[in-house]
Length: 196
Ligand SMILES: Cc1cc2nc3c(=O)[nH]c(=O)nc-3n(C[C@H](O)[C@H](O)[C@H](O)COP(=O)(O)O)c2cc1C
Image 1 (tube, helix red, strand yellow):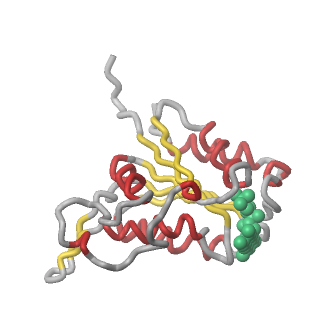
Image 2 (tube, rainbow, N blue to C red; image 1 turned 90 degrees about the horizontal axis):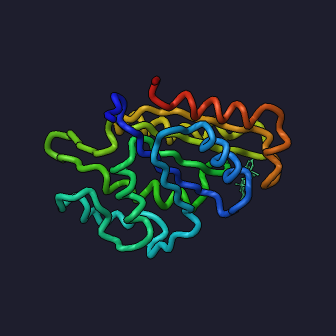
């Protein structure tokens, strides 16, 4: 049987160092709303990085492939990004920004852009994909600030951007005590699926 709507590939990157924390809970609820899609999930905290960010060596700009030349744990994640229709980045708020574990991957995404310095035109395999940000914080401030670089990066790359931010999530694991959060997240992820 042929489907009219192609099955979506969803890549979820958990940027929290906590295996059973608020971010993990957010991700599991997000997954509940997804039907008929292939999901790949990665824990950024499990990856081994040779460099804690981008070296700015710019070698990626001189090769054909959209690849980082540093051979470490970021490489397979960057490859998965190019195959995904939807890239979900989930992070706790750490001092008004994403976790360092997730930021390493964000900076390495430099290799997914190829700039032509003469024309200032660039190409990227990210164009047309959807970037989803899932984030939680202890307080009710800071999450909008966190979301801005993700939104701007998505805009720049020609990606759609969606976010779900959970305020007052408390200590790791406490997110489950917030009323109505689970159903809100399940509804949110369901809304990302193609209409059937
Ligand atoms: C290093 C660190 C920095 C944090 N910074 C903030 C912050 O700036 N604002 C805030 O509201 N919560 C902050 N928090 C709390 C977490 O964002 C919050 O508890 C989050 O839901 C934890 O998610 P997790 O259980 O997946 O780690 C911080 C926690 C840690 C460990």
